[in-house]
Amino acid sequence: MDKVRIGVLGAGYIADYHLGGIAAAGGADVRVIMGRTLERTASVAKRFGIPAITQEWREVLERKDIDAVVILTPDGTHEEVAVAAAEAGKAILLQKPMARSSAECRRIIAAAERAGVDLQVSFMHRYFEEVVYVRDLLGSGSAGPVRSIRLRNATPGPDWKDWFFSQAGGGSGVVLQLGTHGIDLGRHLFGDIERVSATIATQQPERRLADGRRINVEFEDHAFSTYHFAGGALGSHEMNFVEVQGCDRFRLEIYCANGTIWLRTERGLLSIYAPEITGRKEWLMPDLPDRPMGARHHAYWMDGIRGTLPRDKTAEDGLATLLVAEATYRSAREGRRTEVEKIGDVGSRGQR
Image (cartoon, rainbow, N blue to C red; front, side, top):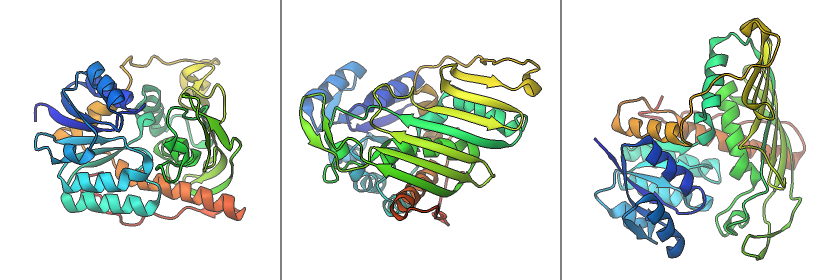
């Protein structure tokens, strides 16, 4: 397969990340994009040189000249659209959160298994250059055991669409919408999360959108969790949709036996204080590859479709993040520490 022929389902804010990453990675032919608003969809198509637009996602799945789809529709539609895409024989890159419940995730995975199609969930942060560097560093063992972590996901919250804040519109709260980024990042770097203690709140029950409309918020917009990782590390995780400035994607502090590692802080994308490793008693900022946003992520995805690289187990990871999110909600509701449900055998043919 010289070029992966792609259809994009969704033309909202996150489409720019995926289309920019696909273009930077190369080796793809984006043939059609679907969006609910024709004017917005036509604008995105023009910027990225996409020849066809539609308002019907089923039209994209019916096309025989499409190998893979990127699903960017509202959270509450993910199960219906992803199951239909699998039944149509399309490889799938599904925007996080994978779905709004672990049951929906399991049904999506089962559909992909039945159809024998590749299913990936889009966790962009694990492909950032600083995260790749740190995962390799932790994997080498030179930093020693991870003792504790501090993680923040914080933004002012999405103000461009009302569906984010509505159950009927297909939205979800800050834990699923933003927190799943951090949950996956934590699991990716430090292993399974076994126990959660959490509190959640809706601090801004009414919001004003960018177009001036005022809407009611049906979900939590703030959450604090503490995690106990299987390897023994302890972690704190703040998820926030009410912070005026917000983080630069995320903020992560890692405290190891032999050093301290900070990602996306006031010290830059990556800073390390580890005299036993570096031989210097000062903060060091390693050089990182300078790649366009999303290039590594989408190149890896398309190489997997071509069969030139093994597949990441992001479908199973997508389910795992929902299980942690559900434990978060149970803990907050019941006011106690909660065990995270085990995935069990979900089936992951073709994934490692």
